[in-house]
Length: 233
Image (cartoon, rainbow, N blue to C red; front, side, top):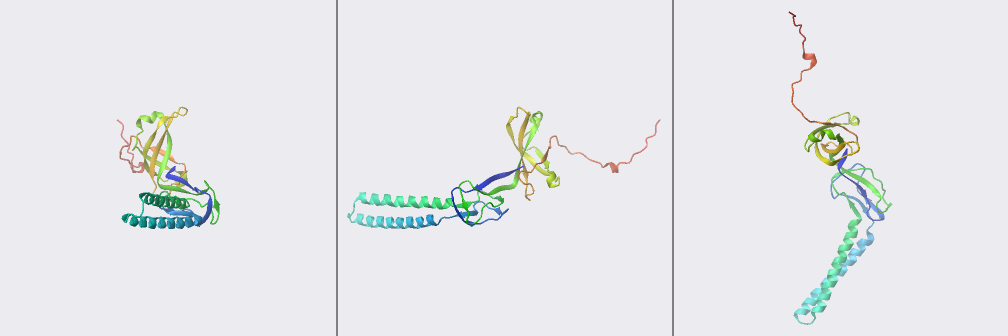
């Protein structure tokens, strides 16, 4: 069994952890802040760049007023406008660096165990936690190729696991692999199972029944049958 979406949350840069905003096993929404890394230097650079932008903007406004009186040249205005655009670009670069220091959840899901502590120095690629979207489960299994003609998207399945008390979960085939394994002569099939209560955990092994050629029939318990002696002629 696999989560619909699964990702390892890692650090994209090397820096110190200043805030941790999640707990083990917490449900999160896309965009929720998980970790904040040190960004004091970047914040100071942002304030400086914003001040430079304000200065360039005022200078451009003054030159435009002088242009009306023909007391400045177009070249001077163009140069000041370019400096203003450069200041805007610097601000965008710094904001991107600040954003890199705020680690957010990429999608809705449930977090795994926390692997960092406040004040720790994390390096690029260090595992912070895991995130899995388990509202639906992808179940991958092999089917002998002799049943290939009966396989199709939408085919209903039943799945159960001993670890879950053999409770039955209903699902359907989502997709079928494009190749048959040359050694086992089987084909990989992926089904989707609804998992609203989160009881199916990614990685669990399940037994699958393909519900092919299903039909309705009247079943009578054996205890309801009364044997009668038929006289012989």
